[in-house]
Image 1 (cartoon, rainbow, N blue to C red):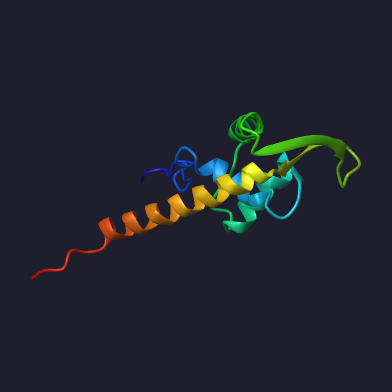
Image 2: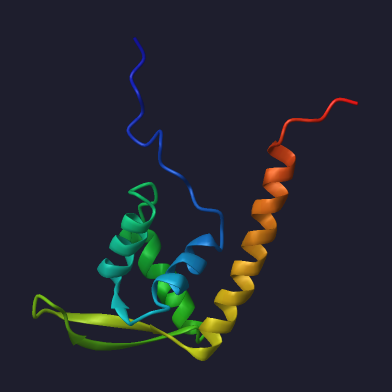
Length: 118
């Protein structure tokens, strides 16, 4: 009997995909890191789990690129938390990333479709 690896169904995100998901999460309102991770997890029906070790470096990278900005506020639980907000540059980047992602999905779909026999 083979044991199922703990992370067998875990999907590793392609480089750049996490950035796009974070930007998308911030499109409607500013959020703290934990809320971003929870939103991605719930919208993906628990398929995508963003670990802290990936999320915060991504947020810092997005901030350096001026795609998000941050400030400290009190969270819903009255704890001090860093909230991230999408900038105008971030919105432009999200649009560009989304368009590239749609092209990639079409390309993968074309490769994965069964070949039509003449």
